[in-house]
Length: 105
Image (cartoon, rainbow, N blue to C red):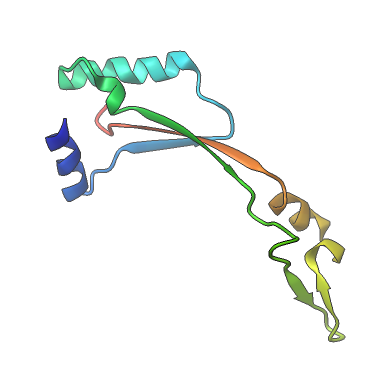
């Protein structure tokens, strides 16, 4: 298994990655593990199939305020601007689910 991982890095044949906003179904993950076991004739394919989740807050208005310069020279914060669509989308907590598995399966 270690030689496979080393070859992947050296040949830049990195694992396939799927990113989703919803958790992956356990059956889908088990299917990837089963296919990995069959492809590489191993019993521990779960070590090559990995699921992680990341929670991100792209923008914190208190710690890192974004200022916009208006045409009249006034400087206002992003929250006080007319473009509230941008402000609301980057100030909410996001959770992304990431599944990686061998590209060959």
